[in-house]
Image (tube, rainbow, N blue to C red; front, side, top):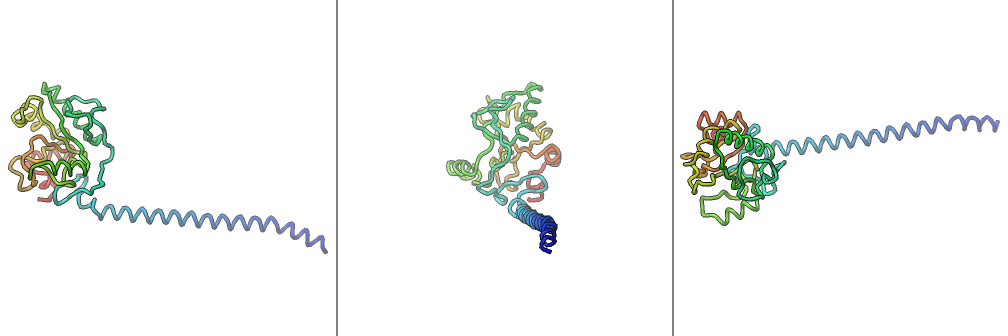
Length: 236
């Protein structure tokens, strides 16, 4: 009788071990499912916050709009900034610490290389990305109306640059370089962001040296219709 009980206990032992392993697997599976559900919920919450939060008030389609009505937060830093001095370039630089987003740089390099092929060179890039803090310094150092408040400058996007010509004598709009840009910049995705006689719409006086990357399709439509970015995006 005692022997039968021992044999029965020995036979039941693998069953009990298997049952414990099964319960552990079920418990572990529940934990994994709970973690996945939590991550999905957090992702959805973050996505909703991004879409319905400050970002959604600035992006129109795929184009980032920055002005006094659509400021950037202090901590906004564009992804993929590259140092122009370290990149191949067919233009001159005023400083070695000018940065743009890679996409903007690549389009700008194609544009200035095309200008050079047309016999127009001597472009001199003076400014690119500026942080919120740097823009605050520029704003404080400038006369009223000559610089945007921090957060309101396109330079913080890394999508805009200022350019002049080596021999322009502060009259860039009278140079062959400016004439070439006016004719061809849209072919490479750039617009003159603050055109003449549009300050009532853009809030910024005429700046023939300031160019903004928006992509070829949008730039072409803006140029053909003689629009500002605000008008194109329905913000005017």
